[in-house]
Length: 154
Image (tube, rainbow, N blue to C red; front, side, top):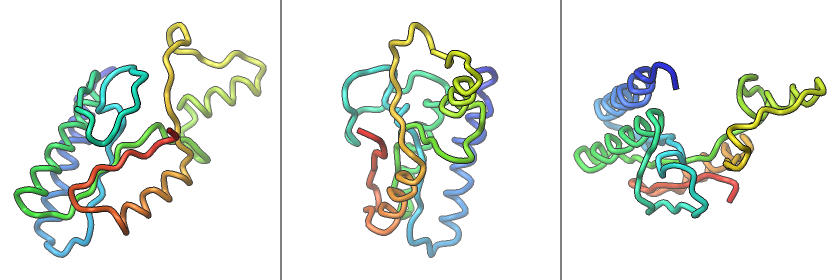
């Protein structure tokens, strides 16, 4: 994870700044907070539901969970119409080339072996970017303030 202080600045402080701006604006119809399924914890074979406990296991996931708690506080304290999403890994066109899917595709096209984390047994769930956008649109228009919505391929 290298220097993880950037996660705190971007995810915790950045979210707090946006929430405060939304509160000051006062006419917000919906605030969509984008989190991650990593807030549920490490490698588990259990399907996580929106009611599952948060148990982040790395600095990035911890900052996303902290941002969720700040969102919850603004919902309760200031009645901001916040909805939260927890998505799988998004992939699709124009993705950063250093991410797993595009990097693997490039390696395979060059006749090289794709990169495998660890012994190859860990699994990750992915969701195509168009499916993620469709989910955001549905949540924007039909999500309930205070609602948490998992977005994924399961």
